[in-house]
Length: 309
Length: 309
Image (tube, rainbow over all chains, first blue to last red; front, side):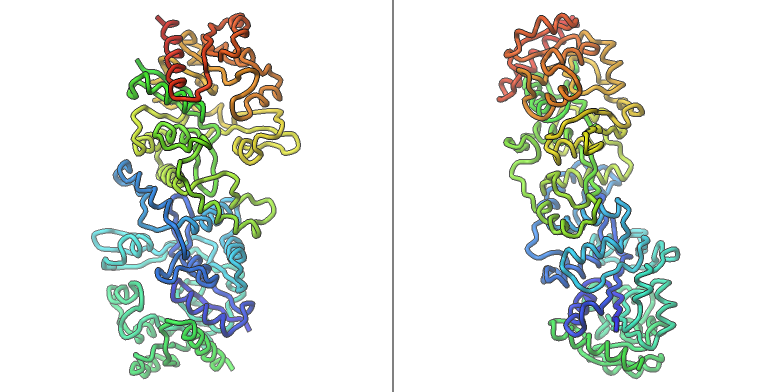
């Protein structure tokens, strides 16, 4: 059995850590969001790939949830020297996107390999191996896809400008995925996209492929008790006119996932989820410990296997 | 009076420091070699510009002669993780070119500004201002020129591969300047190229311009007592079939410089330099202290002015 997980950042990383407690690493394929990738200082940066890699390697900073533990910030601090000379309109040398000194090595290696002509898939496999990971890690695509967030008054921002620079503290009136129409799932991702899946992001190729085997696709609601555990997902849903609840999530996932896992605080919403044509599983989804992550992983696997058996 | 100095790395930086002790910074234009620039980890690196900037800012590491003092090397150390996964033929993640954590900020800023469309001249002025320098600093050209060193058995190497990676410990049978035929002096460099000059490198545009006002061009011999003070200039001259002495240097500079300054240990060579049609000035040229640098600066200025008055 291969378990394919379509995943984003911090939450997905914790889910994967739990999954690896209950499934052999060689049976797990993580297909990771790259729509929030960015270029800073000439360096190609894949925040979700790195968060997952560092988390599974046991090297993530547990307090921040991103970046390496025991990190230093010398290069970022030295950038401040250029604040006084940066011309109007230039974004060079800005330090709002924190890159730790150790973390930089990952971006150096990835940027240089891409410049040598390697695909992001190849580089991702090399970086995972360098960190001793034994699962299969794949970017969702080798092409560039960029989440573009539209903010009244500020115009269009890259996801990292919205999320990190603006601390997702501004209202959003649109989201689009630049390049998504032209982007293709990698051959490896298409090949491995079988087994149970926790869907975190939708890409055109994903939608069709998941809809065709919807019964064994399991999604985990990121909205718990009407709010996102972390980040701006709740406000973004509201700003885009959607219901901020597990039911709103169910409406988005119903076409591609047969099962929605919701938190126990939302147990009363299960009938409304089921009315949308999804099975609904109610458990603890707040992964505050490895044990909860592992239990959630077991639940999602059972849901996917139960449905397909 | 404007003093234009055509300069390279460590020696030129020390010369400039001396010059700034005897001439107002607003009267000094440093036109700096960029033929040894390189791209590492996706970052555009200008070693001579940085050595001069850091030296004049009083921030250079005095023992190494390059890079910043009180530097840390966290990012470089972290690169070693990728040694085990780098595919054959890839040079990604190699750490033989030392980039300190503070120093990285300079490369980040330069790389990002160039990507925004700024010229290297503009970025160089901004970086010099950020470090509080008051002289005018210009790259010799805004186009890319690359020193390519031919080494039997290893093929063609970039200058940094030859100089740093191979510790200039391999014999050279050719040197060419890739892109030099197409490169143009910047408008600013052409404009400022008057006054005395210590010539360190020759670029096509330089040669013609200097030959036309050869009388007030002063060169300082980098060969002292038959050897280079630092680096491979002596061996490179020998390997390329030239005499390794101040006389060999005089043969190279005679078409473009009216005066050659040689070290006092080479005093006996003065008649042979003069036989090549150059004036010869004999002084202490080993800049082991700021006082020697300043004295050498005075000597070169006097030579240039004496000749042109």
